[in-house]
Image (cartoon, rainbow, N blue to C red; front, side, top):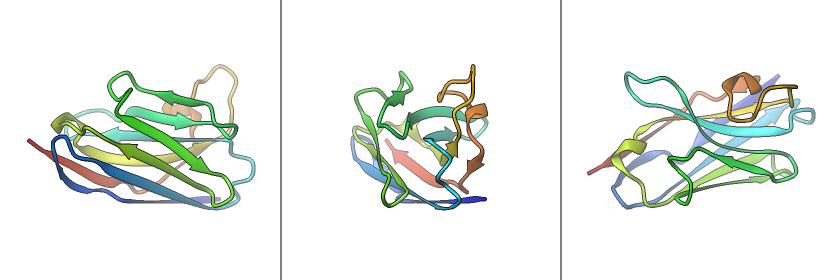
Length: 125
């Protein structure tokens, strides 16, 4: 079992920044990829960013250049630095962790086994 706890969400004005963090605990040693997804009201959950154990990163086109994902393997933590935030970034952000799976990319929710409870990010215009 793996537990994920997100932190760092909040209310920010457009153009501002937030840093989300996710702490993983439990049996994390076999899980290589950590990711962030988000879900806005009335919309499906969508991929934001992911990072593999070795540091390879993946980003949704909508956030490239504005959001940076990083991880601290020693502390079992992943961070999401979000800059130049837009109102359309408003959503609940979920941290996730998963094992590599044949034929499934880190951009897909099916790649992940455990999810956090989510943290709200609200960007005002």
